[in-house]
Length: 234
Image (cartoon, rainbow, N blue to C red; front, side, top):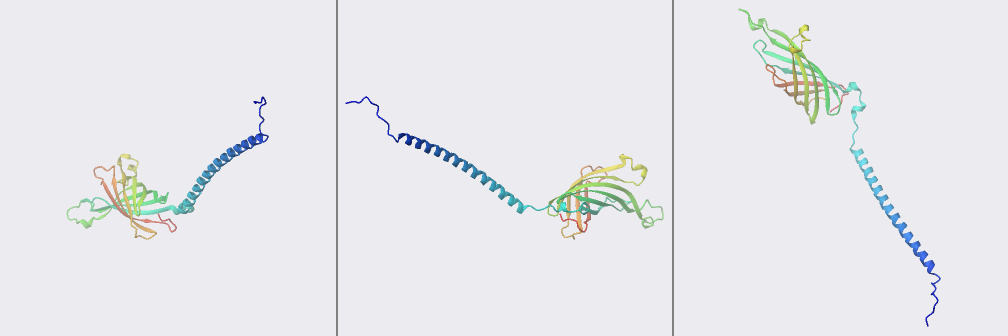
């Protein structure tokens, strides 16, 4: 016999559906929390790596001693000698130079200088005169210098500079630009590692990019740098 009445749902079906929905919501919430925890962990990992790098950089970082020194203590002085081309009238001629340099970094300096050209010789001899009768010192001119040097390895430096030289001491000719000879020098500078802290022997081997007839293309100078008592080692 078939009954016309619709069967009734069990009394606890509604509770079961509610519990199912609650479990699904809880699972969704747990998944979102898990994803959030993963992202949080990734962020913390990146932050930890950053802090580790900062600690590593701190261990390898060295303070710049230039910042703790007076400007005056960053100035050094020097002198050098360049032997010039000889001639019959001037068997011995040379250029004496003096420089003042300012240390801008641990490896580089900029500076200015001046030079004095001196010769030992004699004028044309008259009959009966000997070479030693008129042998004297000749003041052949002066010059102005500027330069930059930068250490490339240990005691070896690259040096470049610009110089102007006037081979006369006549004041009226100082303003005549055509009488000045100009030089653009580039080359190497060696600071003798065996020198004392305050006196450092140097050798410069430079090439003149602007050399003309009568000017040597290769310039070789020897000298000494004088550091102040509290100057910095490079």
